Amino acid sequence: MTIASQTSDLFKPVQLGAIQLQNRIAMAPLTRSRAQAGDVPSELAPEYYAQRAGAGLIIAEATQISPQGKGYAWTPGIYNEAQVAGWKKVTDAVHAKGGHIFLQLWHVGRISHPDLQPGNALPVAPSAVTPQGNAFTETGFKPFVEPRALELSELPGIIEQYKTAAQLAIKAGFDGVEIHGANGYLLDQFLRDKTNRRTDAYGGSIENRARLLLEVVEAVTSVIPSERVGIRLSPISPANDIADSDPKALFSYVVEQLNRFKLVYLHVVEGATGGPRQVEHGFDLQVLRDLFKGFYIANNGYDLPLATKAREGNLADIVAFGRPWIANPDLVERLKHNADLASFNPDTLYGGGAAGYTDYPALNLA
Ligand SMILES: Cc1cc2nc3c(=O)[nH]c(=O)nc-3n(C[C@H](O)[C@H](O)[C@H](O)COP(=O)(O)O)c2cc1C
Image 1 (cartoon, rainbow, N blue to C red):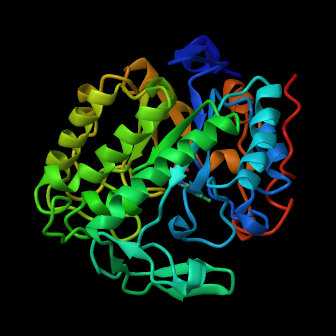
Image 2 (image 1 turned 135 degrees about the horizontal axis):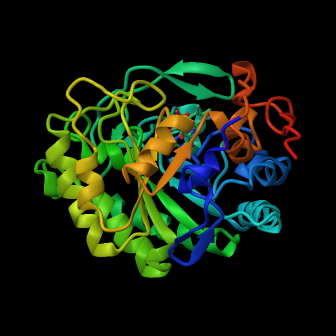
């Protein structure tokens, strides 16, 4: 048996801003739709995340910054004290196991449904462009509707919600936050010209389309230290019916501008989220790694050989695994020992209780 730790620094500690990670393997954010009433994290979430505390860094599931930011049934929030109390149990449980955990801050924009919105309102977006596909509501899948274009006067309020959510995340004991700029949600909808048809200061040129994301980053780093703030982007992913006519120019600009804020990491979904790493009209994402001054976290389709290669070639500072964490709570140990990985049950991914959540066993590798 090859012990991978002999040939790579994936399993060695590394300093990420203010915190020392046990290794260079992260848990990518994974929505599991098990929150309680009031969008408070599940009673089982402390156990679920503690089981996975062997990750160098856990990035907790996408968490809405406001009721309007919600787009799926049973996702947790971070905008009130009950949610802070629920999350505090999670961060305490992870810290007790020696792990570290960031929270992913989320506003879904148009990827929602009136059933999930306060007062059954229309979801909001940069422009009234209907996404293809279905929303996951408490009563099943329903086709997306045409969203309402946000008024210019509403944007400062949304920026303020990101700021408050970041403060509440720190209050809940998180080591930091990840701003969700990926996968076709609100900030990504503003970035891309397929979804942003605005004619004001937040639409048109690349500079204008990047404005909201950069203002959110500025607001969040004005209230918590930038060494506790990362961002996730998915520059060539079509997730949630998103596209741009020139992603290389767009994301090169965004990443150059991000350097002003000294964020601790840039987390890139390489390729189509959960799909091919190479996509049509894609570009070499190493351009972004080279431009960015902080840590680069790579994600999408990694396994042990690819992760080892990424470190040996210095293509990434940290590698995030998503799906493999679901059925392998001891993923780092399994990778270290080159052990077999369990596969997850797709029927228990979203919603429900302990089944398919906290009942995947760790291997006895001692
Ligand atoms: C069940 C599930 C839930 C996910 N939830 C999120 C999420 O909340 N936030 C996010 O940015 N990405 C989310 N993703 C995408 C993953 O973080 C990751 O980018 C993707 O699974 C590719 O990585 P992998 O090949 O290692 O699984 C989710 C993916 C899956 C399968």
